[in-house]
Amino acid sequence: MAEAKMKCVSIVKSNLLVILTMIGVSLGFGAGFVAREFNPSSDALMWIGMAGELYLRMLRSMIVPLIVSSVITGTASMDPKSNGKVSAVCFLYIMITNMMPTIIGSILVVAIKPGEGVADAKSQYNLTTNLETQDIFADLLRNLVPANLVSATFEQAQTKYHDEMVPSNKNPNVSITIVSKSVGSAPSSNILGLVIVSAVFGLATSHMKDVGLPFKLFFSSATEVILRILRWLIWSTPVGVLSLVARTIAGSQNLEEDLRKLGVYFGTVMTGLLLCGFIIQPITYFIVCRKNPFRFWFSILQPTMIVFATSSTAIAIPESFECLEKGNGLDKRVTRFVVPLSAALGRCGSSMYITVSCLFVAQLVNVEVDFAKIVIVCILTTFSTLAVPSVTGASLITVIILLTALNIPAEAASLLFALEWFLDRFRSVVNYYIQTLGVVVTYEKCKASLPSSEEKDDVLDEKSDNIFVPQENESENVERTDQQCHL
Image (cartoon, rainbow, N blue to C red; front, side, top):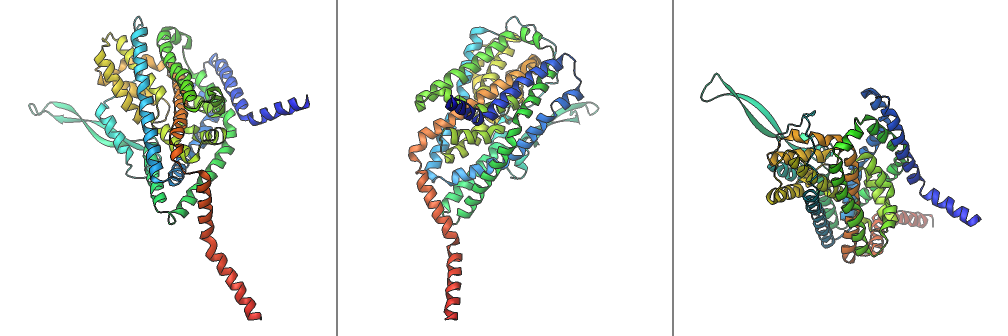
C-alpha cells in the first residue's frame, strides 16, 4: 500500500505541470463561458487576457535567442556530411507533409461538398488584399537571406502596395489610380532566415575545428542558460493558459449560430485534421520507431497544451527540446536543428485548413470546382505554406491571397472568421504533432551517419581542457621556479 502511494505521488510530481496546465485549460473554458453571459467590453476582455499576454511576451522574448544558439550548437556538433543528410531528410519530410493534406482536403471537399446550401453573408470585415502569388514566393526567397540579422529578429520582408494618383495620358484633367509595390517589412520574426544563417554559422564553426571551438562553447553555454530561464518561466503556463482561453471564449459572438451555419465546413476541416494528426501520425510513428505512439503523445503533452493555448508552435520550442531529448532520447544535435526548422516551415494542419477553406469558398460562390482548380489550389497551398509565419491567424490571410489567385472575391471568405479562433488552435496542434514526428523520422533515418555522442563529448572535453592547459603549466612552472630559488 505504501509503495503504491509513493508511486502515485511520484507520478503526480513528475507530471505536475501537465496536470496544472490541464486544470488551467478547463478553468479557462468555464470562466470564458461565464463571462460571455455578461457581454464583456473590449476593456474587460483586455484585462481577462492580460496574464496570458504577459505570459506570451515572456516566452517570445527568449525564442529568437534560443533558436539562434541551439541551431548553431546543433550544426556545429555534426560533420558536413551529417549536416547535409539531416537537412535533406528534414526538408523532404516537410515538403511531403505540406503537400499530403492538400490532396486529402481536396478529396474531402469534393466528397462532402461543405459549401453547398450555405447562405452567404455580407462581409463584415475589410478583406481587401492586393498581394499577388508571385510576391509570396519572392518574399520567401528574400526571407531566406535576411539583409540585417538584427532586424530579422523582429521583422521579415513583405511586399507592400501603394495607390498613386497620376494624370491620365489621354486627359490630363482626369486622374487614374496606379498600384505600385515595394519591398517593405512585416512585424514578425524572420525565423526561417535566422535558422538558415545560424546553420551557416554552425557549419563554419564545425569546419574551423579547434579555432571554432570557443565559438561553439559559447553558444552551447548560451543554449543551456536560456533553457534554464525558460524552465523557470514555463511554470506560469497554467495561469497564462487560463487567461488566454478565457479571453478567447468570452470574446466569441454567436457561437451556436456560427456552428449551426458552418457545421458541415467545420466537420470537413476537423475530419481532415483528425485524419492527419491522429491517424496518419501515430501509424507513421509506429512504422518508423516500432514503439507505442500513445506513449509518445503523452511525452509531448505539455508542449501540446502550450500550442493549443497560444496557437503557435514556435513558442513550444523550449518544451519540445526537453520532451524529445530527455523523454524520447533523441540526439540533441538533431533536435536543435530540426525543431526550429520544422517550426518555421512545417504546416501540415495549415495546409489542410487552407485547401478546404479555399474550395469551400469556391463552392459557396457557385464557382465550379474542377480538376484544374484543385491542382492549382494544391500547388499554391504547398508552396505558400512555407511562407506562413508562426503567428495567430496567418493561415486565414493565406486563404484570402489564394482566393484572389482563383479570381474569387476576398469578401466571400468573411464567414471563415466565425470559427477562426477554434480551428486555429486545432490546426496548430496538428502542425505540432507532424513537426515532432518529423524530428523522430529525421533522427531515425540519420542516426547511423552521426558519430557517437560519447566520442563527440570526449573530444570536446579534451579540447576544452587543452584550452586552459598552458595556464596550468605556466602556474606549475612558476611554483617550480620559486622552489628552486628557495633551494
